[in-house]
Image 1 (cartoon, rainbow, N blue to C red):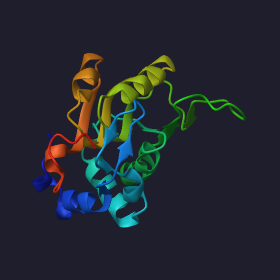
Image 2 (image 1 turned 45 degrees about the vertical axis):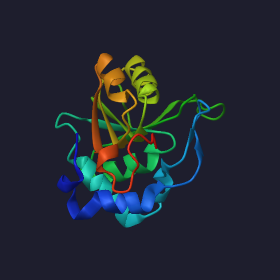
Image 3 (image 1 turned 30 degrees about the vertical axis):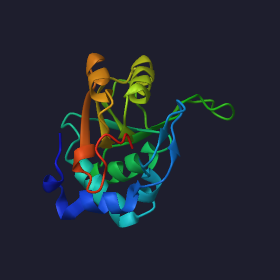
Length: 184
């Protein structure tokens, strides 16, 4: 678990002020939230995105060879993180593209390369687990995942059951102004 006192330049406060939104939000499973973390506001702020990527770079395991961003929230993060670390990146679609290349994984060669998943927010961990499975079936070993914000909804435990270690830049408790127990 990370605490905001370990982040440079009040990064947790800046992230909360920019991306923590007090407004209704509907999850894919039909649940409704009163507030949420808006990764697009983070990605739209070049200075904040750069600083977030720099902080995330410290969480990348030393033996990582490739970064994998999950559409759509993980894509700007993985591009910025790739620039910050010098590691190549791939981009993961939830489903294979229905035209053109028809690929689900785009970008750098990935087979046999130790890959780290990158996403914005982790709640249940189901999306990261699904993407880890896709990469593993394609020949890319995945043992780690990074996120900007971890919500305490079982994601870390689910991933650990499948041999994926979650490294979170922030947890719910690290966000100034976040209501405890609000699964943003």
